[in-house]
Length: 296
Image (tube, rainbow, N blue to C red; front, side, top):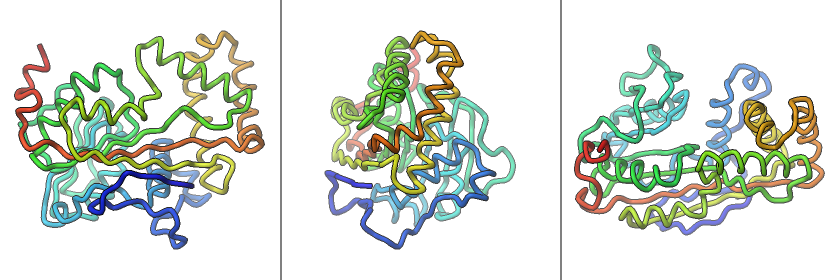
């Protein structure tokens, strides 16, 4: 994996040259016991060799408030709450797939709408978006203004996403990826948002924007094998939608999927993972002052 960044000395820049990894990938036995969302968490953690890069370690050590938007199964919240017992961690998602009973006392989960966050102004020190797909106008008009509203002055937000503009696509993957992108275009969502996120943040009055990207080779080692598995699972779940967009039946689609692993290795397919860290402005007045304004 190769990485580039526009980081500052205050950030925890991911170091992919370090041969002694802190975080490893799930073993074959563990792989059989975890869900697709859990797998993605472990893959991200391995890729970056950290759970965050924003300079919030001291705040979290002494006791801060953290919000994970679209937290999924809550793996990140559970790990972070154990690592920083003096801080309070909240994960929200539109689906109740997070833990409801067995969890650390400083970890909380709730089924909430990210477009209208049910929190007071300047509540959190640190916000996180990970693998969240929304329409461009929702990012600009709701998600980023709401994030800025609930973030304390000087607080940080961290965002990460796949770049689906994949490199060295074979013929089967090209058909699927083109259909995947087209499906989201039909639904007025730009799935190729990564290069544009910095611009959205500047428009929303965030400052000190730092970006990292890492190139991930799908043909290289155990990470590559797991990444291929991740893509195939994702595309298989979208089979009804993508069959309709591409204009093929399910048997033809499954045939495309069956060729992906061999094809990705042959063509040495890769993709980029983007991670952007940004600091809030000094006053919440730069955003919407009240949540009620977003609901109009």
